[in-house]
Image (cartoon, rainbow, N blue to C red; front, side):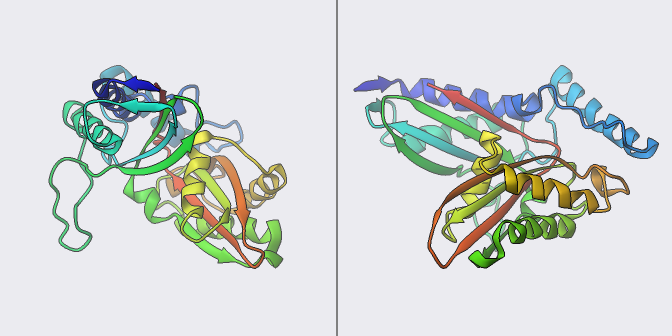
Length: 272
């Protein structure tokens, strides 16, 4: 059994969320410009590029919406920790310190109707996965409200196949338009259950993988006809990347979810 110092976990989460709000690895080397763009869309793409560069050089948040903190955590069965009665408390402490020390806007309210904001950006929304070994792997995403609001989930029937899923992705993007601040990074989840497929779509964004190239090709072909571009203005580049993850499901179901992320793609990972 390996014991990790709780203070090390808190510190790692604090650094992770500060960095993904200022200089996320997920945007390293990313360019929103495309040779096929018109002059107006190229100008908008250049503004987004300048924003990324200034965020890193001037240590300013990439977006004024610093998002809710979401964590996908893999915990080895041979790992333990010190400093708190639960790993959840350590992760939340790290998030709270990040949003305080990093001068990040706190976007989480503690009641969906009363809308009270305690100024802590807590709780972090945590998904757990147990695994072999003694590793602690933490994916973090700062998810803004705009792109989250235009994400979608649907219970499809198996008969619609890949084409039906691709249509659903296209429909979600068309309905989103410029409301979620494109170019979008798109996570698609297919399979599982009603409650798990949305998390699967988020994992596609975090891991930046595609587990079904045939579906990916169909989606990319359809989204060429969306009719809008950068920031929702007329153009040809509304999507930067599409990622797909699949899971086993029931014989009568084909759940699908589309997790949209705005151009401020704030994702990172730490392994202890």
